Image 1 (cartoon, rainbow, N blue to C red):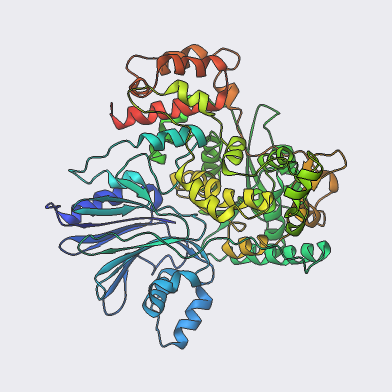
Image 2 (cartoon, rainbow, N blue to C red):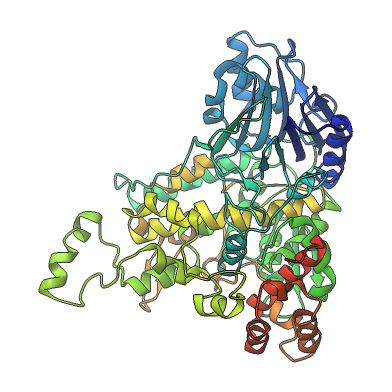
Length: 614
């Protein structure tokens, strides 16, 4: 993987070379294998490289032979060899074996429509001198990040917010509603960032900026479409899923360097290990971390998977104080990020990076196969019975005839939010100083927009769609990308592949989730049936844990850390007090609930690092 950056400025009067070099330095952890810049009088691009494919000849920025196109690219195309053959038939000739050159030739051949042909993870910018613009794109599902700054006289982009820091003379103002989104969701949803002047390019979107700085609107080129296909039986769906999973894992193994896999005790990573072991002719290098708290320790289940497939298994048990690692974690996220599993994900990435430069992970399985507890809870609250849509259309009439027997609640966006956010409106209202933010219990903009595409889906697919468009890119994939890049490790996600998503979005909901013999909703049923081919039934039916950390223990549920935490968060010098009421902060601490305490600790550390007081 790599770090990318660039600028178009009509007001910057300094040395553009030095500026791009400084932007590159801020992303050096993303690309330890090389760097490069290309620039003209008022615009330029930079690149830091982690070499995975064609290490010798794939340096960037890369240009076409005529010099009219220049690219800085972060990602991997898994279909680049097929595209290369197609482009050669059009007369294109290639000087390297890299996928970067294929991206460049694809843009030359098909223009902005090239992204519809790509399969992979990517964020890139192409300077097009003929069209006098810069073209930016981010992959279908948001695996790779791209942020941009838009101010009068200056447009700049980068892989990370930190790389925009060298832009002198740019004022960055906190977006208070974005911070409220953070309190509600654990993350700040795109296109927002914590700063008003900086935005995220949304997954599956492109952006065009003229070389004199006129910024266009973000344009969508892909979104998932849920259309259940009832032409297959459940047995046929299992066969089809087996084929799709195997093909995706195999396609993600294209590499010129050694690779391995993350292995938890869960179904998704165990599925990846199973398919990798069948495809490869050598043992898979697998990496697992655990804790000295048995409630969070998945090492025994991971060891069972590793033994079954003869994996070269590397294990580390974490015994640490989360507060010690907090400053380093905060530095790399660039904005508040409250998912505490960022801590173990960092250590897992560090363990893997000691052995290989690239790994596969099992992220995305819960979104594709309705495996989250929130999915089950949502369906239980709705009293959903899984009937086809034509039956559900009769619910309003049936409700009048026999009240209470049918769908009693509307699956709206506010109903969904109450199942996923850790901080309700009362807690957030108690935190905000009245002179800072006039609080209202609003729906985050991204959720409002995406719900318009999901409102006619059944409740299962609505939840899956919303998770794919909100939680997956903004939390899960952000966490994995940052943790990997902190350790110069590339992480590939075979389940988060737009072709796999397009397949999964046609699975009828009742094949993924329905009530079990105990009357409780059980998810991932189709995946469990498939994995029963490769694992014992007791393993497949194990209780879901999720990749979580004993954060309550780290934060001192036994009282050991409560006073230091209280002293830090209520310190008169804490920048939190510029935003929040001390009574509200004290109430969060007094509750003893670990998630909001961790959020406040992260935000406090982030604000201290900004040297910013409102």
